[in-house]
Every structure is written in structure tokens, then in C-alpha cells.
Amino acid sequence: MTTLAIDIGGTKIAAAVCDANDSIIQRWRVPTPMDADAINQHIADIYHQAVASGHDDIEAIGISAAGNVGADRKTITIAANIPAWINYDLSEHVGALIDHAVPVIVENDANCAGWGEYVHGAGQGSRNMVALTVGTGLGGAIVIDGRLYRGSFGMAAELGHLPMVPDGDTCGCGLRGCAERYTSGSALEHFAKSAVRRRPQDAKRLLELCGGDVNKLEGPMVSQAAQEGDVLGLYAFGKIGEWLGRTMAAVSAVLDPDLFVIGGGVVAVGDILLDPARYNYARFLEGSAYRGHAKIVAATAGQDAGLIGAANLALH
Ligand SMILES: [Zn+2]
Image 1 (cartoon, rainbow, N blue to C red):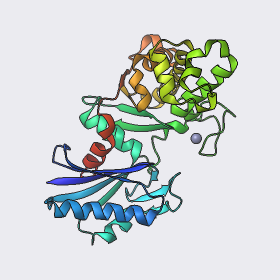
Image 2: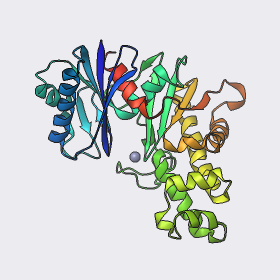
Image 3: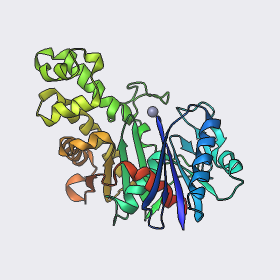
Image 4: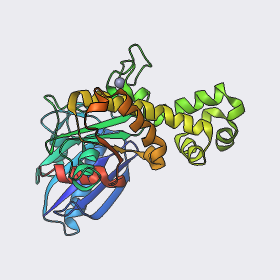
């Protein structure tokens, strides 16, 4: 028995046939077209190639998609990157191209990555886990009593859009002051750039890394500088770490999880991000001195967390 997992990212579609333990046995990778029909066709082509190459025991297709997915686990309510994905039944569109040979399950990408961590990564053994993916934005996944929590309309765990700052910075979602404006890869760049402009005398290393043009400063450069001990690089991580901690404290007031798993590219710096996050989580947690604290750890399932999670969720 196998599943076909599909991860539709902003730039590439990653796909994998996974065995009964969600281990990857064959992979595909194609650039993501911006056209919904072309995406459907790519997925159908990969399915047909997988069957033709001997995987005639695929029981389901699990799709991880960057968008809000309805409670039916088929329909994309809205997605930022693909204009056609408004109340779009992705399951039906893909299913029609493969003669409905197997069920097609659609899940939000952050839910897939978080679930991948829960079943095969840093979340194993937790009862109530919250995963936060610090990428371009801030993705969330919630596991309660060992089950993925999707909410009433499939819109739970949009933790990047927790309103943290009244009338704060405008967010891509149209609202203001959302958590991901202050803790994300984009926020890291924002804090670093504004620090360079305010304190050019301290910005020698960051300016060196971006070729002297602060507008070209990118997240990986800030990570490199921080790992070298650069004061402004560390400052920028301190800021997104502080807001990550505040966000986790707010989440704890609602869910009281025993574990936070932090994923995404910037977590490669480890405690440079996690220490200020842990400090501020404890600082803003209600009853902090008298209660149990959640563990805060880095994700371990790596780049494949989304695929692994999609494969597992396709059958659960
Ligand atoms: Zn928002």
C-alpha cells in the first residue's frame, strides 16, 4: 500500500510516492505553473507516471496546498498565489483527470508540515502540540489530543494572523498588526534593514554581505551575520524571537499546549532564535511562575515534513 503526496509550493511542485510508514520511495519535482488547470494536469501526469512505474497500489493522493482549505478537505477557499483558487474544488478537478481512480485529499500546507513533525519529527510523543513555520509568513498547525485540529470551517491555526498589535503594520491578508508582520522571514529582513539604516556605524558586516545596498539584504545574509556574532544580525533575530515568544504566550492562553515545534528556514540558527523566543514566552505567559511551561524546540523532519504529513493525512 502506498500514497502519492503532492506539495504545491510557490515555485515548485514536489511529489513523492510514500510507503505505509510514510517513507519516500520515489520523487518528482516540477516548477509550479501559475495556472490552475496546468497544476491539475501536472498532478495527474505524476500520478499516471507513478502507476506506470509500478506503483499500482496507490490508495490515495494527499495534496499540501498554500491556501485555506475547507472542512471537506477538498475545496480551497482562498489562496494568495493562484487567482483561480477561490472556492475551488481541487480534489474534483484532479480527480476528473485520473478517472477518480483514488480519493484526492487536500490540506493546508502548514497543517501538512506540522502533522509531518507530529508523526515523524520533533512532535512525536506530544499530546497537545502547536507547530509554527517561520517562512515568508508564519504558518501554524494545531494538534489536540493527538489529532489535527481543523476548526469548524477548516480555518483553524491561522496563527500568523493573530492580531498582536492594534492598528499595527498592514498584513498581506488586508488586516493590520498580524503576528507574521513581526515574526517571519520577511519580518527578519524588515528589522535588519531598519537597523542598518538607523545604525550604519554598526552595519559593516551586513552591508558587506548585501554588496553595500541595504535594499538587497536578504534573510540568509542576516542568519550568516548573526551566526558570526554580528550585533545587528543578533538584534534582528532578537526581535523576531521576542514576537515569536509573545505569539506562543497568546496561543497558550487558548490551547495550553505541552510543545511548540518551530520550523522554517530561519530556524537553522537554532538558539539565536529560540532563546529570545523561550525568554519572551515565559515573560508573557499568564501565571508563568506557577504553571508548567511548554517545551520549545526546532523542527526535525526537514524539507520533507509537508510531503510526509500530506501522505499520512491522505489516509487519516
Ligand atoms: Zn494577516
